[in-house]
Image 1 (cartoon, rainbow over the protein chains, first blue to last red):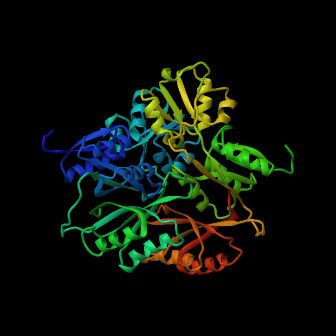
Image 2: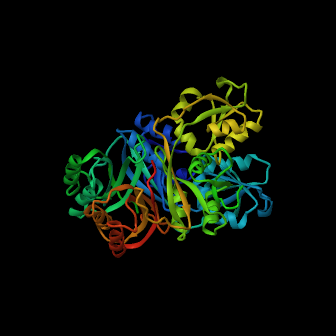
Image 3: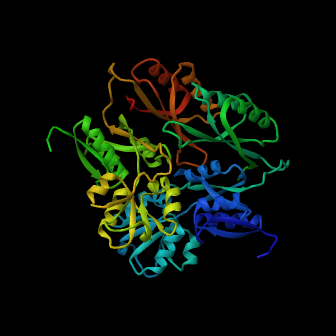
Length: 280
Length: 280
């Protein structure tokens, strides 16, 4: 470990999809990787500058938004998004060497991984119990330590790391399974002409009819392309939402900087989560 | 069980929040209750008319949308929403009689319940492992059968059902914790003058700039009040979304029926999930 390297936290243990994403990021931007046991601890560590940056999943093309990550971004006013990374997701059925499909009595994995392989499991392992774990890597390490006829849904990284055998590859029900990760820090990203940028904001609306329509109108008038809109509860009462919008452009350039100054007058609260180079 | 009673399915086993919601519904609308082990099986059973109706949670004021339920509504074209029910949620820490707080080494419950008690757990049980289960009721029944110094987060119904002791009430981090349930069937609800109605739709947009803005404009022009907007992935590729909107009014009355006929020409696909009396 070089001392001048930044430290990047990820949801561990080793072998998770977050670890895969962090390893890909590391190829272009040398960093020292550090696992964290939970998203809350990970994001707190960035806010307190105990680590420099962190990589967190924010949405999956099958399962949708990762609610806790949106909530944590919302709760930490000093944190900015500095990059995004798209990771194709393929799931594997992992067992201890020597086990066969028909012996399996239990399949364990993270709820999102289970959700993404639901049809395959129903078809090929109708007899097996399905048990949720905190991560796909934890599921793999459990299998490695257990003598029971169980299987884990996990990554190729976990397969190698825990010396497991792969009974079936690509068991996800949908082929186009991609997870979008955000890289977060307490810094911001200045404009550089070489990149196409995206900006992420979160806001709450005034309690007025057509409030969301008016906000979207400001984007439409300036031909700013929305790439995503997500709502999350404000946690005050049912029926009150916080919106997350991603769109093209950088907050320090027109037309986005003008848009943001107009929006501030139209909403109850607004925070720019960051402007960052759009991922491939 | 009277033979003329409708059968209402819910996510079991007995003692879940779904069971609580079903029991409240039953007080006004006599039904025979039947537990189901999974949302997929439950919604399928309604579509295949194996049961008459089902009650499913669709959003919580803290945790947000229940993604799998939205996806299942979307996948079953014959299913309609016929009613909604709001259930205040309070969580309890349940143990075998005789156990004290300082002995607890592990807390087990459904991931949503754990998420809703995160601060309380960090403050009062920092030493305990947190393990996820498929339902709060399963967690309670596990505690009842175990000799380990473990606790479950669960309901008052589970406490009574499994003869457990409550170590702490209202351990949820936010006071205004409410879950919204939908009652679904293959029938639709005709207009009756005694009720204020809500309508739920799902749609996908044409791939055009400002497409969502135009859709919201049709609501705004007719002073139709949006009560909720939610996006879910279409599962084809990252960045393609399906929208769920709830709003006031009935599909068989103006201005909603006109709105729907206009919207059909502006979107890629549109389905009315149902018009139903607004919950209290």
